[in-house]
Length: 366
Length: 159
Length: 104
Image (cartoon, rainbow over all chains, first blue to last red):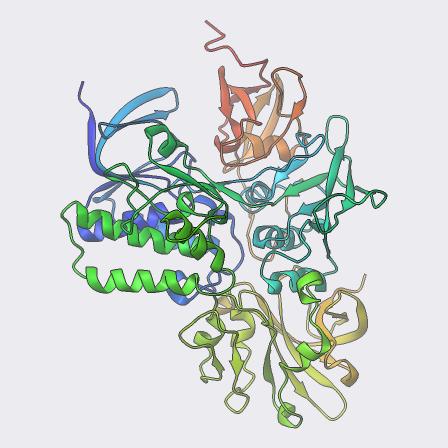
């Protein structure tokens, strides 16, 4: 049977995938983007806040508008970039073939090189009744509210004070939802303090050393039981109190979605600082399987700004390996690397840097 | 404090203000105490008054001699962590960022709120600016009593 | 519950479309997913856990967690959080693991 072939296939139409396709097109490489949602943009499409970083990563532009820029870059190149939406990659094989499911149809497509830019998924938290309707991933609530205009409930409690927890709490307030509390198990706030200050001045308390013990409700969430935690992260007996709430958002970090890479046998390592199980890669972003590359959160959870730059860098490198060297390769290569260094150089980037060192075996893991 | 509650100490707040006497004109107060990778305040300033430098993790430093208090950094800051303040003989004027609907209207009285989220006073809305360039972050100029120079941070509708 | 006014986003005039949910006539708007339309109508329980029949609702919104799997136009295990709502869709709560081509 005739099988479609692409020089380059990119799995995931989020910030990393779109950026990789753009630079590949500029280098002269035709590509196929495969996206399981019915629209491109990944998680940028719900980010109503202005981005941090520098102008090169579209700082001070709202994520929803960065999505438009990146999608437009791809649409400007329709002769170079093919897009399959509503399509999930369900198989990846050693002979450079993958199987996709679109609707009820399975199709095989072959490639010379593959960029896996599947991103990350929200981590879950173990507590009694954590499966009750009304308990959501914080990012999921952000989608529901900012993409579809649908509110999760009237009174929300946020678990986790990382940037996602803080930003989504602020956006819930903007949508007219009452945010009762942000609970943080650690002794200090996890995300940028400017986000925390924004919430506090709007009257939302962030309770450090606090977490949820159980959810209460019959067919949907009605209340939660909260407890204080001691220095060893153990619940303090007698400190429990209830909060009546109809929506609980879980924002306790993201896990890279490298299932396809595990499937094909790429060497994976568990690096907590990168969010979990990540592929071992070289400086070209190539995994231990030849011709399979990665970009974005799938190889280490960071801000979307980094995913964009990693996408550009990987698009540049994969094209060169395919024999299509970008006319401005040297400058771009240096620029992307220095942008990533810059984004990772502060105290919030240390985790990523150390994680990458662990991944490359340049650092002893205790 | 900032680490645990999101509220900076009075010393931290004061460290961001210029020396006495400079506030006869609006000046930018950058409440960005932490090293985070971000520099739009510096790159958006047309007067070269905010400096961050090569490493975008460096917290901003305002050159109060160059700053004219135009407010561009106020609506350009992704953390909504900048406001301007101007000292008059009997009151203060702040320009603050605001991203909630309904926006206030000129001439209205709203509550003045501190960094803890508490209502501390009532303030007069002097001017509401929002154009395409502001990208939905309104710039609100308010009149505030003098004693709240280190306390006032935002407004809340009187209900 | 839907957002009426928002400082950043505009949810202007939207086009209403209709679908059925367990036989009842429902509505949503163009641009909705099946799950977002149901959520807006106050329907929180989208599926039941297979063994213990515990209620499950909207959770991940990226087609990853299976909590919102339903039968749509006779196809079981449809990830309703990433499935665009279409006029005339027939949406049903799924029994267990779902039967493939149950109408045949």
